[in-house]
Image 1: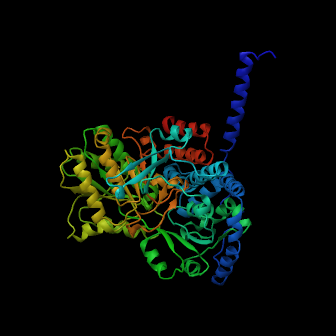
Image 2: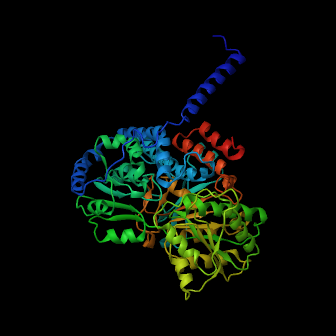
Image 3: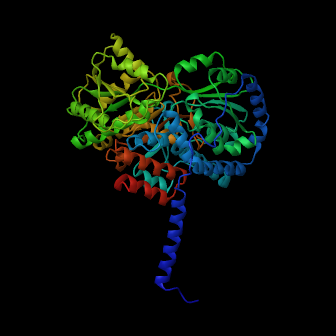
Length: 594
């Protein structure tokens, strides 16, 4: 058979590529949503109906547990397809509930935050679970670790660390040096079977108010084999109609039910004796209220006062100071600070020569951020409280960047010395702001001994700050390479559930392969975790790392409102439909603003 001419082959390849691109671009066409028209606004569930709904859902528990893995995979794949279809409707409804305009160019960053805490988070999480389920279906076991190592002294103190990210070529080209690890109890990387984790039963899930992607629901249903009664937070009830369209495959067969309403409906849910598990994302006050009422064990994530520890070292320079100040400002202002992992305390050596410049550049980038709407209940009270501190500085937005009339300007409390006798200091250490507040704490440690400083900083955070959710460590490559083994030991020993090295730890929540929750032995930030899609035995914490010179720092820093919205809209599409074309579009938006 004669071979085809080179020109013909090239034309065929071009035709195939063009067809693929057109199909992908078509998926970027937004679905038109007419505000307040043609959608079902769900009414509050009557209290007397709550037990009926719970019992009806519970009657399907054995059926859901016994459904074949292949069918569950198809159901989750359909849910992801539904999310692609209704992503724009979901986002617009969330914009309405938060008071964000659909088209105002000044509010692009707020729309980006909605994408990040909604479709982007949901898509990446669902696809992470799918990756595990498909591997189990094909091989009988979850994906093995990419690498593992043992850290510790004596055998009784050893911990195994397994690398679960990057997991494939797409992850590698996306992260460019980013790694995600789990610290396990014991010195062997043991994994359990899906049969062991799918215990079945019924879970009541009380959704978060600061984001609306129901990742906890996916964990309970697809990793633990439970039917779910899901009660969204009243803050996010506006998106219920879109969420029900996305989750229709579970709702139509009765494996999932929604409850709508306030505290009375939530109370009726958690009191019911049929529940085998309660999952809560919220605050300590909410947890304390339901703890005495609950009949079932509670898996909870309750927030924290989160530190960013800046390790002094020879690799710091003016450019790096500016880069990480820009990243810190974006992390603080993300979702207007309404994030359980939001940074609140900057821990630095008072002898660090770059300390003052880092603080000034952080203020600059805080003033440059276009901000998100202050939508979370009572956040204005918290903002006013910290704004009233004697040495608090209110950072005014630079001209042209203020996006909302009721915008909460960032508050910076500099030069806090370690004095627990001061009531102000106590409040800074123990009260979660949940709004744009940053405090700088100065430690009297030498700047020329980086590991001595880091040990002191870790001791300070564990002894003084409320919570055990996240810690960020900023450390240059030279110092990290020189003290690599000691750094690993310190990270393993830290009493925090998620540790970020040179990166905001919040990104760990987007990966089902990692875990999200407080440290097991320190329950201020709750108990239990979500995630662990690769089914490791006894995970203790997640560690998310990027190099000091990471290319992705531009993505996670303060950018213009236009660029931020463009990048995160492309990122949401990519996480829902991960392939090289959608990934390339993220890069063109990030580096070329195209």
